[in-house]
Image (cartoon, rainbow, N blue to C red):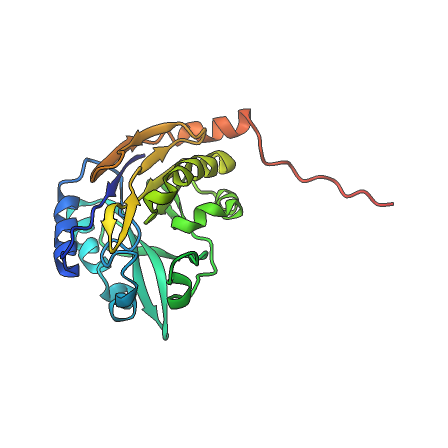
Length: 260
C-alpha cells in the first residue's frame, strides 16, 4: 500500500474557504498513492475553538464534499483528516474515509477528547465506536491525536483486523517528543503499520510539532517529513505484518479455564 500524508501549515489570516481551496490544489499535486491522509480539523484549525459551533456541519455538507470531488477526480482513497460534524444537536471531531468514486465509505468520531489547556472536551461530544473499514487496498483503522495515549484502542483496532492505522492530529510542539514516542509505541503495541499525519507551525496561537510519519508493524520509520509543510510518502509492506506477528507473537492465545 502506497500512502501519502499532508503535513499542513496554517497561515495567519487564511480563511476556511481559502484553506479548502489550497488543500484541494495540494491533493491534485500529491505524490502517487493508494491512500492520501489529511490532518485533524485541517479546515478550521484545531485551536480555533470560538468557531467550532458555527463551523460544524452534517458530514456531507462539510469540507468533506470538496475532498470527495478531488478523490473522484484522482481515483484515490482519501482519509479526509477530521472535520467538525454536526449531528442531532451534537458536534463531533469526525474522520471521514472517501473512496475513489467520491463516496463516503465510513467515518470515525474521536473517542478521547482533549481536556488539558483545551476546550475540545467542553465543546464536542465523544464518539463511542472503534472503526476499521474494509477497502480494496486493505483494512483501514482510525484514531485521532489524543487517542494515541490509549493503547487499548489500538489493540482493539488490531483485533478488528486493521492492516494500517491512520492517525490525523494537531499535536503541539510543546509535546513533540511525546508524539514521536507514542506513534512508534502504538505501532509496536498493535504490531500494525501506522500513519501519523500532523499539522505544523503556528495554529491559532499554538505551535504544531509536525513530524508526520509512516511506520511499519515493527515501529520502523518508512517515511517522515520533519518540521516543514509538505507530503510524507512511503510504501507500507502490509504483507510483512502478519509474518512479524507470527514470528514475534504478542497476543496470547485463549487460556483454558481452571476449575477448582
